[in-house]
Amino acid sequence: MQDEIKNKLNKINDLSTLSVVAQNVIQLTQSPKTSALQVGDAISQDPALSSKVLRLANSTFYGFPRKIVTISSAIVILGFSNIRNIAITASIANLVPLKKDSGYFDRLEFWKHSLACGITSRLLAKRSGMKNIEEVFLWGLLHDLGKIVLDEYFKEEFVRAISLAKEKDILLRDAEEEIFGIDHAAVGGMMGEIWNLPQTLLKAIRFHHNPSLANESMRMVALVHLSDVFCRAIGLNDGGDSKIPLINTDAWNLFKCNKQLIKNLFSEMEQEIANSTDFLTFLE
Image (cartoon, rainbow, N blue to C red; front, side):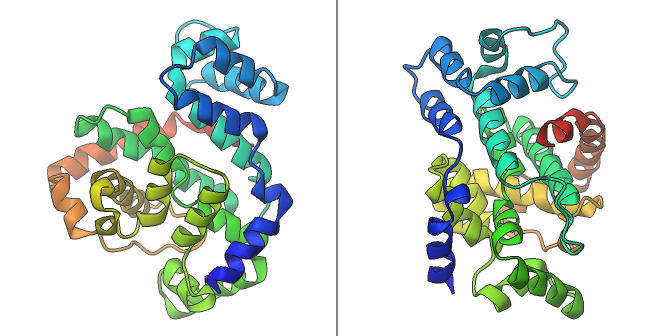
């Protein structure tokens, strides 16, 4: 069924085209030669995106003391990574409405979990001395992209997978394997390729359940894997199942996890997640 899913994704016009402006922003912000003026000009082509950038820049999520009134100021203050995050997330949120609820898959819970994973990934990245912290946030935020794709465009089969997971008391991804022959991580990777998402993000999407398969990118993917499990451990599930996956041993050892680290991390997570309501409003 893998080829069938990929063929269908390629044929769905509204899904296969990430916002042209978003694609342009992705390309521009990945080049060291790009200026803030060029990125500002690109964003200004989409008034709705411009408005969202300013609204989120002035939210408590970023917590800047002074009001940001222009796109150029927002780019300078937030940086290219944050601007790219906003452009990608806003474009995806437009394609798959947050409030659409099938009665089986709760998208609001999904985005709450995803946002918590982004925040936790960033916290873990800080603790481990990683430099690309804002890029890490996006990895966590979009790691479960495939679930949204399945819910939007393979509804009947996805509902069957959710029902099967509950019936057998198994992880949703195991139920997806039974129904689709692949899981949401693989589907998210397919969609990310169609959208030309950054390669680092693609790896986080594809391998967050099995970071040991990510080869040279294992450290990055392990961080997202741990964040996913930790968020589930504090009750922030993804809207599809409520089980807590086993932690990958290599990931656990790589970040030198222990009880004290987890205790401190959970405290930080709760505080940061509580301050993130503006980001959910942004997604709406």
